[in-house]
Image (cartoon, rainbow over all chains, first blue to last red; front, side, top):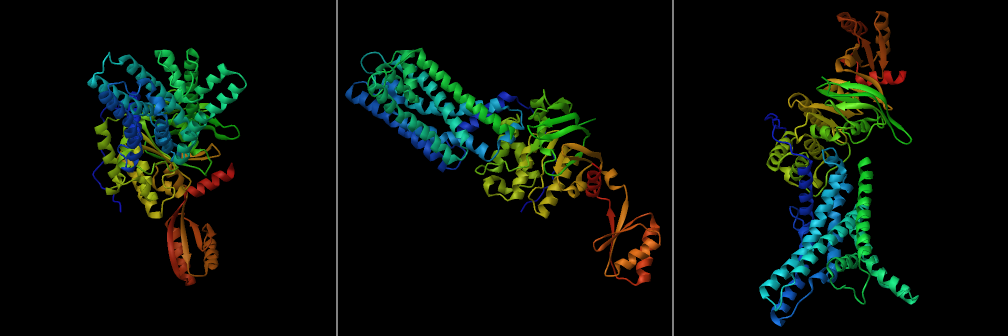
Length: 285
Length: 302
């Protein structure tokens, strides 16, 4: 089986880089993990299949622009339209980022090195955020390049495209912080997938229920806030406040303004705090 | 020169005191940390890594304070946990390279070092296979490799022989001995099996209930008294009576007689006694006073 080869031990006296380097290396390692790079082929199927599905509307949109000479899918509404695919991506891939280190107790191997808990969590959130952002931003960019090439009458919607990119980043941050927090509380991978998707479905399903019950009691104005239960509509409402885009809700408008931005910030803060607590507990074990 | 030193170190959890006013110093070389399960060994290591704040007293590792210089300490030390800590779906090479980078080694250096240490711990071709398929012995080697990959000045090994078969245990102990001597890396190794530490350590610290029972060089443990164990086919009682009559200090341990060695005359007395009584002498074995006995004695006094 194993032999101990006697070739003598060599000491290492090369450079030892700082914690910034280690944190970046961890973020890149985790990001590769999200897309199954450096993992067996079966780990690549789900993320790349979902990324391909995300590109289909972009291609269709370009075709509409080229053949029908009219605008395709609006950039600002893309994330809301594709929300189911994005949610599945989050549910399927967030557990791969945090679950193995907790479940197989790999965390002590990190913590016995210079990286701190905050840097570890920061690297994980960054990796997931970049992954979700790439998932949304790639088709948006493809569509924008398509629009430039097709050259529709009138100026290109550069402003809306850039606004949707910023929005995509906000959405990615919100979804990642929440997805990772949920997945970190359910370290078995299957449970993690289920918990993330359940929370998304509950949030979406509760919208019409709350909306209807409030509308019936004649509280139309307050009922509109129910839309913001769904993270995609919450971010859409922030986008509408920041960039003046029309709301992409199913019917009627919804509140938009500093209040929805405040909710977004509070939610991101809460998710990050939950993650921090979870890892402080894991570190103490 | 001290590798690490604690001064009145105390760790109080809500209900238990894991470390109780522990004052101890450790020099270079291999030091064994002995204690029963729950004696506070793992807690002590976590404090020394700067991961748990002490409730009282202080500790310095490589002359760095554990409460303020934790990150710097962790740059210079390696740690092999007691429990399983390997993700099953990555290969040993991948894991060790990644953890080397977490210790700050640039990518190419991380690859070279990982290949080096995996060879040193005795993992050959199998290091490219996922860790999930490894035997316990191989997993222990991977855990040791990740603790060594950044060429630390000191490594903490928490129960490295746990779960190994006798042969794996021997190989692991030989490896630890090499790390302490050939590699020139100081080692703090914990175990609840005292006999195995006796074979590889220069110095042994015994703790119980978080308190220091004893800390001394291995020689002091083993050279206090020398004994010889005698086994005969039958007639053990007659032999014991005869030797006592000759003025030897004799005690009976199961099917063995343990005789305290006063000098060469003790061996002569045993030889003459067995020959005169016409007994079949099966074994005459030099029995050192083992750490275990010391531990038992010390524990009895506390």
